[in-house]
Image (cartoon, rainbow over all chains, first blue to last red):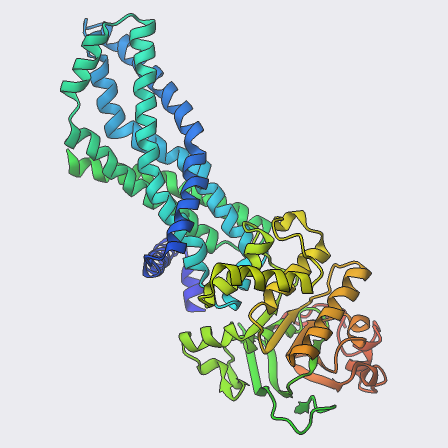
Length: 256
Length: 274
């Protein structure tokens, strides 16, 4: 009872929830086994939530690259430095926009579906049935989805970056007529593998873990009603987005 | 109060022994000192109005809930004192059919039935296939193994859930409103499956329901739960003629009686309505 009261208190509620979420994470990781069935389940979920998010990620990446080039050329033109566009696009993409926008899109596309799916499983007694069959639903349902999110987001970020660079090339070279050699050489010499590219990869791993953990936790702790599942889905998007931006600032301030 | 499902099995040891069971949810007492014995081979029903704590009894027997006091023993083992691993072993020996079947919506019919087998045995794939197909055929649904649950009718889904519940040959079956929401043909089919499986495999079956008519043709013994206690026990036909006011009201569907029409929240001053 005391725990329930604390959970609903405005001050302690978020702390209690965060603690429960962490315990949930440990419970999931405790169930990690090198079994072929579990690996197969993770790969299946990676396909369902990762590969099926590819189209939206690629379309958004392409247009982000184009609009970034457009804005950069407009601004740099005033200083006669429009040939630096690939440097600006590359650094901002690999360091910030790629990981952050991919994670936000992933939260909207896959995070919501994970929460809704697990919440509905709870509402239709599938989770209870699993417990009664002596099958741990955290290992069977939550863990594969969490692991799949952790694997998918860095891969999707790489795809987002690649398509954004393509969009930038199409606009800067194809439309604005910038020199292709200058574009690629600035990108190659100005964007560093360790600081820029790997920095973005580290961020995307953290974001992938955050979104997936939030999604499975809210799904698993959703009230088993239509309204409860709806609220949990909304909470997933809101909390994931806020946490992505907070963690982005913290990581950036340590990396630079 | 102690009631025994003695009808035809009085010389046997009870499979399930419940003593002075008390369960509270917040300030409200759901079960208030229930004691009963359930004997092997019988189909026993827990009946009573909605929200009276029938499903709570099943959850206490399956170890999903812990009693505030009293005990639930299954095969002489106190369920509340079982360790996590003992509880896992115990649950492998019970089959459960929930109200809406609770089939896993992301798996095919075949995978639904195969899930407990894969989880708890090391049987090779050809044997799993043979086992699943034999259970599907036993419930009259050979040929639907590749369908998804949403492609099945309510009655078919319930039969698939039944096949999944018995696939590991449990010794105890728990049914939570197994016939609710089904058409008359599906009701008869599930009821026949429950009876035949119980008798053929020598199971002990516990059924939670509020449908008196459906249970008359199925169960051997019946407990009527009212206000946290056992108000009556016996065969449904005997209970229909009971002079106990609560049992008479429930079995014969009367509006007037000790089971109140108005909801009574704990702590409210109901004198205002008098």
